[in-house]
Every structure is written in structure tokens, then in C-alpha cells.
Image (cartoon, rainbow, N blue to C red):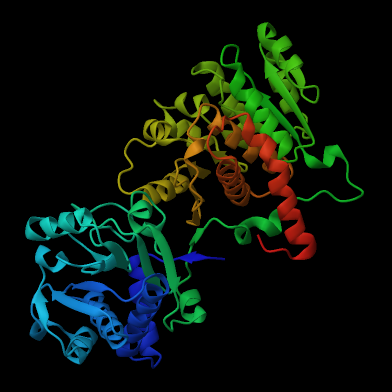
Length: 489
């Protein structure tokens, strides 16, 4: 699994590595070598300006400058502050640089074909302002390519947020493991291509930090996929009850198609009599039942997964159905109207959660339900999962799946084409279909987000929500091949 480390965890990994006997000077040399290697892979020798800050990120810069100069590059080095004021490993490597050290200023950019940003890295604790803000703006306006070391200066490594202003890099080289800010917006966009290089911090040390944030890849959830057995039948693959609305009928129809594509054995849409015929005609494999039978059907344990929200309508009736489903301890996916219906009384919703429950809010719905949660996206998603007792998918291009126990995954597949009506309904259906087959809530949510993003990326421009379920068989076949034959994704 591809762990993500917070800035604090990365500092601790450095400390434990040094404590184990690897000198910090060597780690810094390895970091500089890694960046130098990536630069040489991409560019022929040219005029390069290495911009160094007053900490270890600046120390990396002195290593990079020395290694590039040794290979014949025309290198200028600028420093924020004085070499004499540098400390520790940064001072050691600054003293190995025998060239001129200029004052860090926009003048460093004149004539540069490549800029290496080693000013602050991931651990910036204050906003960039004043003369430094002018410098960052000049970096972003200059025609040279920009390489960021660890994190583009001005981007918070743990949250991905901009501290005042931030460097917009063409690519970023970081070390050991990625940080949340490499994948959370706007940090991901500012990083450009992100390369993670090993610098000598062992997997055992990373494991000793007990990381609980991961990139959302199949390694997280593939062992939980409920592939059908040769002797299996549809009733073993779960029976979804999907609550359909009378007016916005397309939402549940999209979700139902996705749930069936995800593998649910049976699916029944419940609706008021006026809409029943529409749902009955939509797809031959979908069953329908009048809404009046909701509580009766909930008594049958074979109806093991419930989807409420897409097109359901906001109000008392939706609230009652949500509470009934949660009290029945069915696997539940709550989306859209099911969440907004509790905007004035979220504690009642949270108190009712018993079985496997997944909430799938976008930012607007999240704000209505968790209006007093502040902070960055990752922190808010994790706090919401803990408070509600459910798995929370905080949707967006950088979707986060968070569990009540603190685990979280971040989506790293960006598919802007998914910003289309009905896309979220498809995602809710995917989660429900996986839950119906007995997949644990966190893993089902993570897999659904991955499938959704992969489908959007594969289809590309012109995507509409109806296209997403039809992309699933190919993706599921790839996952099956991976299991059956060890094929790498």
C-alpha cells in the first residue's frame, strides 16, 4: 500500500533514521542527488538558478547546485539569509559549495532556463508575504521551467493549501513517501508531475509511524472484492433497495445501473405509484415496489443494502426512511437529499448509525451536516467520519474516503469530466452495489471512488453520467485479471 505521511510524520521518519545511525548529512546528500538525477533525465545542461531557503530545503539546494555544476551546468545559487546563519546539515553542504552565493531576489531569474525551488519545502508554518511574495510571483511569471524540491514553496505539505502565494512548478521531487499536499487541491496542481524518491529511510521506519493515510490504489481493497464463486447465485450477491423519487427520477435510475454493474445480485426500486411505471420500464433487470411496502421489505434480511438520497426529496418522509434503515442495521448509503434532510438535526442521524454506513456528501452537503467542522479537507473528512460513526466520502476531484477509526485514502486520479449531473448518483450506486455483496464499508467506498475516477479518466471529454456504468465491466475485468493472473494494473 502506498502510504502518505504528514509533514510531522516525515520529520519523525528523518529523526528515527538519523537515530538509527544514518547521518543527516547523508540523507541530505541523497535528497540532492535524487533531484539532480531527475533534472538530468529531463533537461540538457543549461543555465539554472537554485533558490535556497534558510532550512534543510535550502541545504538540499546546495547539494543540487554542486552536483549539477560538476556535470557542466551553468549554476547560480541564491540564499535567503547568510551562509553563516545556516545550521546543521544545511551549513555543512553550503560550505561544500565553492561558488558565489547571491542574495535571493527576482534578479536570480534573469537569464535562467531552469529554476530549482528549494526555498521552503513542505513545512512552511506561515504565509509568504512581502519581498518573498514578490519573488514567488516573479518565479511564476518567468518563462523558465520550475522544479520544486519536496513541495512548491508556499504550499502546505499536510493540507495542500496555499500559504499566501505559492510556486507553480512543472514537476516536484519529494522523498520517501508523498505527503497529503501532493494530492489535495490546489497542491496537486501546483506540484505538476510529482516524483517520490528513496533517500535511505527504511520501510520499517515508515511502518513504525503507523501511517493511516494512503493513496487510493487497489492494494487497499482488492483482497476484499466479493468475486462470485462458481457455485454462487444471485441471492448471495445481495439485494439492494433503492428509494426512488417522484420528480428527479433519473438520479436513482443512474444509481441502480451502477449498483448492478458493481455486482449486486438483485435491485428493487421503491417509489410512489405515480412513478412506478417509469422505473419499471427503465431497465428489464430492475424490480419495483410501491413505497408503502418499504417497512415490510426492510423486515426481510435478504434486502441487505439500502440506498437513500438521490432524487428522494428533502423532508420528514426521507428522514423516517433513513432512520428505519439505520435501525434495521442494514448496509446503508446516504447521499444528497438523505443528508440534507438532517441539516437541522444531524445528531439524530449520527445517533441512529448502527451497521455499515457510507455518507457521500459534496462540499455543500457536507457543510449542511457538519457546519462547525473547520480546517483542511482531509482533517474535516476524518473528523466527520469519527463524529458520525460512518464512512464519509467527501467528494471532489481530490475525493477523500475517511473511516471512523482514522483511516483515510485520497484519490489521486483526476478526471475533470466527472463534473457532470448524475455523476455523484452513479458513485452512490457503486458503493451500494459493493456493500450488498458483503464488502466492508471503508473498502467498498474506496473501491467505488477508484472505479468512478478511472471510468471518468478513461472516457475523457464528452462524458455524461450514463457513460460511467458502461465503463465498469472493463475495469472490473482488469481487476479480475490482476487477481487471477497477477497482472499489474
